[in-house]
Amino acid sequence: MNPVIENLIKIMNDRKLSKVSFADLIEFPEAKWNKIANGKQRLSVNELSIIAEKLQIREIDIYTYPFVFVKKEAKDTIERISVTFDVSPENRDMLLNLVTGR
Image (cartoon, rainbow, N blue to C red; front, side):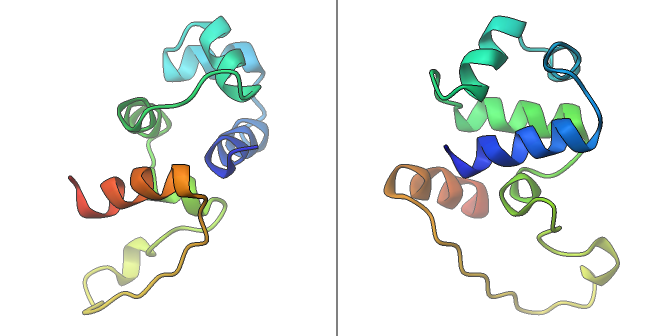
């Protein structure tokens, strides 16, 4: 399974939401969320951004869940960040788009 989808399911479970209530929260039709959760439909970068907004978290934090990419209290003092991700080729471009903002 796609690690991003696995993390979204972890978020859903950690927030004690059913599939129906999670779909309502992210404002996706239940059938669409079920297809995404079951790996039958891909999640676009735009859709991931919408989900992050609805969950009130950053997109990058979905990739690193349950860990926060950069702790909010440390962000003003950090001069340089180095992060390594092991991602499949199909997820590499999505991750690079999120990090670079392109």
